Amino acid sequence: MHVYCRVDLVVTDPAAVTAHALAELRSANIDWSTEEDDVDTAAAELRGDLARSLASVVDIRRVGDGVPGVEFRGGLCWAEPGPPRDGF
Picture 1 (tube, rainbow, N blue to C red):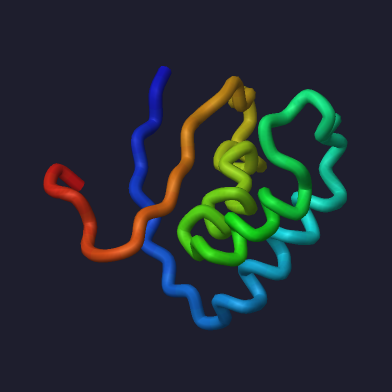
Picture 2: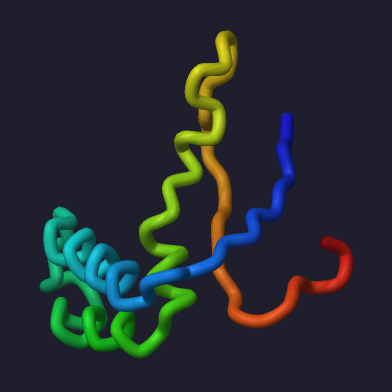
């Protein structure tokens, strides 16, 4: 079963979104020795890209919360600035 959705959000405090994304990044259990970047480089990328920061903290696993007989198996979530794409 696939559920397709588009969520329209208004960011009222970009600094708060970015700060939350940075906190999540720094607390994540990431072995930075196996990554191309280090934590400071990744943090700088988040600071410079609000859409990426927002997408990194949206938790789509909660979509089915409270719905009996539904188990979340996976999904995809991303954020883009600007108007919605055609087809949505």
